[in-house]
Length: 389
Length: 46
Image 1 (cartoon, each protein chain N blue to C red):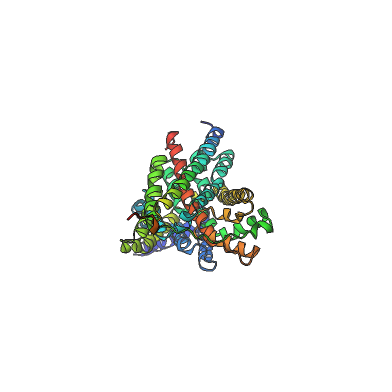
Image 2 (image 1 turned 90 degrees about the vertical axis):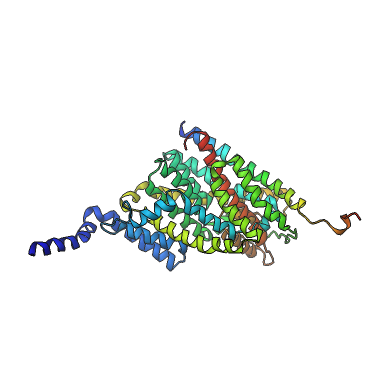
């Protein structure tokens, strides 16, 4: 009897013993990281919809003797259900598509070029990551943080993890870096915008665009983008196809129930499951590496260079247009929608109280959404051509 | 393939491809918006 009680007490103490042993230190640190993410999500409202479930998943995975990521564990089931096969990021993209309005972009199609300039960070970061000795696939995954697009980062990195080309634990680090920097765009971008532009440039007024976009154009547009992506970069078709499906349902106006479900229930459930499963990959023993810190540093660099790229094109356009294009618009050429466009509006108003750049910036911002997915799709197409995937 | 060749290929073909594809989309979007504009009343022939 006494032996049974002792062994039962041992069993109850096993968790604490494991947690407070030297091998439990990485998990203890990750529990601290999870608490930090709770603080960021709740007190600072840093991407709470995603950061909160990621943090909870991280907490669950790092508690002593946790088997949530073991075979048939709670988070493993979620991971296999929608991360391992890239389903959740795509479902989230359907929701994003149904929440996006491409009217400002169709009114001024050239704004999409800012969406290309805003991807410069991806390619320059890739060069730096390779120079630092990152394996090619991990370098590509880190560079894609410059897409400023969480689902794209998860999709691409998980594709490599599935092929055994990168450590699955890195998917969590990459996702957290991507979502953290997306949330920090309002802090990262304004100083760069002020540094790279003169007061005169920032004060450039742009009259409101009165181009009327016909409904037929809005309906044909998602089909057109899907077909072009399919022809040029078929490996990225699931990404672009998902975002355009959501948008197509919205603009068609005939499937309001599906649109509503895409932007609410489907996006919300997918976000919850994706966050938990990604958090589950953040086991301290695999997550705490010097490489993880480098991933965060390179991710920041990618977003800074994206902003610089967009602003540089804005400045060139300003000169070519004889001072009619406000170069701040270039900073909106990233995928953080509609945050980047709002920042341009705020900075434009600082330069000139009567300067309303929002609708122009929205055009560049939706161009950035398409640009980021297109850049990732083209990278995948090139990798496929090289036989790396 | 060494890292430098890989990186430069990605930079040139990746960035160039993204720019060209989006430029193509800009042209197509311009055409699309113009083609879909409803005709003015004067354009109809009785």
